[in-house]
Amino acid sequence: GALRSRVEPYDGTELPEGVYLLTAAADVQKDRVELGVKGWGKGEESWLIAYEVFYGDTQTLYAVHEGNLWYRVEKYLEKSFEHEYGIKLRISACAIDAGYATKSVQNFTKRMQRRGKSWIFPIQGDKGMEGAPLLNRGSVRSKVRIKQFIVGTATAKNIIFSRLHITEYGPGYMHFPKFCDEEYFLQLTAEKQKQVYEKGVPVRKRWEKIRTRNE
Image 1 (tube, rainbow, N blue to C red):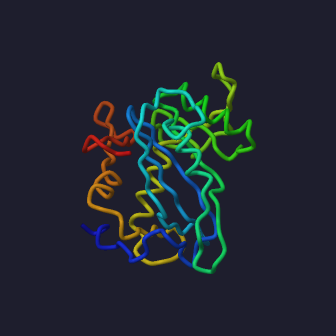
Image 2 (cartoon, rainbow, N blue to C red):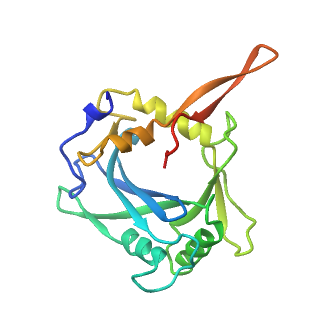
């Protein structure tokens, strides 16, 4: 409710004044890729710009035709976004979760990098350990020889939830456009922290789902 009330009148068709940089992140499910585009300003103030869902078999490999899911993702990532100042910005970096359909994601990102799109790369979450770095330096372990990065999921969630509590525009504030519906906010807040005890002593906290979907 509180987050829903923060929805602003912009709709992502034109980048707001404070946006200087665009990034994207994609979550991969069995039958779809859900991709969000964020705009960034001073002090990591952020604006959700777009949220697109691409349906199709994510296990399939990349192929150059409109019916291919990964080709449609590529075409979207190539688009430019009009700024209210009249300039156009393109996405500077895109992370794709390789936790599901790993082979397809790695195949896609390697093809993209071979074509000069080194800003598209695969990531995978760690086991949610507290204190892990937000992003490691990456390593090459897969058969397709693509560098993959590990995200400290607990660290990332801590940052996001702390920023959701910022209520004034400025560093760290998260802006939401008018197309954000109740389902979006339910997914955004689909986890909570739980204290873990050992022999009656609090030792750490962990994040756990309170509803099924949290793309």
